[in-house]
Image (tube, rainbow, N blue to C red; front, side, top):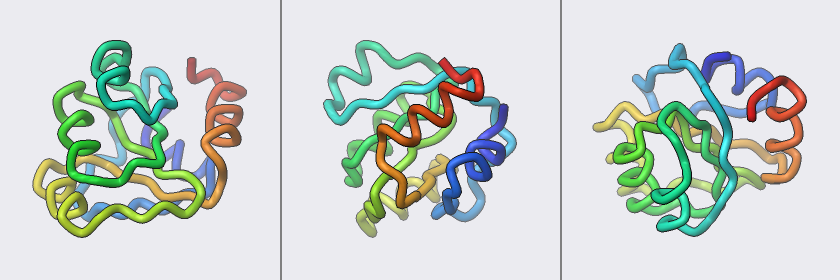
Amino acid sequence: MTVRDVIDLIGAESVVSGADLDREVTGGYACDMLSWVMANAEAGMAWSTVQAHMNVIAVAVLMELSCVILPEGVKLEPDALRKAEDEKIAVLATDKTAFEVSGILYGKGIR
C-alpha cells in the first residue's frame, strides 16, 4: 500500500506539495509522545498524531516514516509545513479520529 492509497482509504488531503505519495507504507503507528515514537516506530510506517509542530517533522525524517497523519482536522503549523515541504515528508489531514484511521488501516492489512 502506498501513501496515495492511504489518502483514498481515510479520505485525507495531502497538505505538502512535492511529497512522495507513492512511497510504500509498511505499517502504522498512533502516538502523541515523540520520544515513544522515536523508540518504537519503524521506517516506512504511517504515523497518526494530533501534534502539528516542527518536532513532528523532525521525528518523521529521523525515523524515515512514510507519512504523518493529522486526525480530527488538526492543521500543521506554518513553520512545520515549510519544513515538511523542504524534507518532502507527506503530511495527510483528515477529519477522522486517530481511532478511526487506525481501524481503517488495520482492516486493510496495515499492522
